[in-house]
Image (cartoon, rainbow, N blue to C red):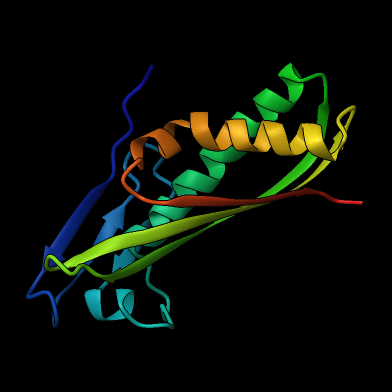
Length: 146
């Protein structure tokens, strides 16, 4: 399996500096990062490590869930997955991720609601990004779209 690479160039202090994160392997873009904007409610055109983790988690989870729905005898027509990653001050110093909420809505043939929720829970436990983030509480909100 391949290794994927991203690169960040940073200039200046934490509070006044900034940088750019480059998605090196895919070459799809370079994005601005800044700690003040990372800690603000409005990202104002910059990304953050938390947003990148959310992107990684939602895409990995969608892939894993589609595989598990198939293994359970269903056919995923569409899966809409979002991941909300929260950052807060760490009582031990610095900051930490306080939780991740995965929300998934699926249109699936061949599985009832209970079967879909079981596949969704199994995907949460077995997605490689979920496994990598075991130090963060991950919650799930999963339902079929009617």
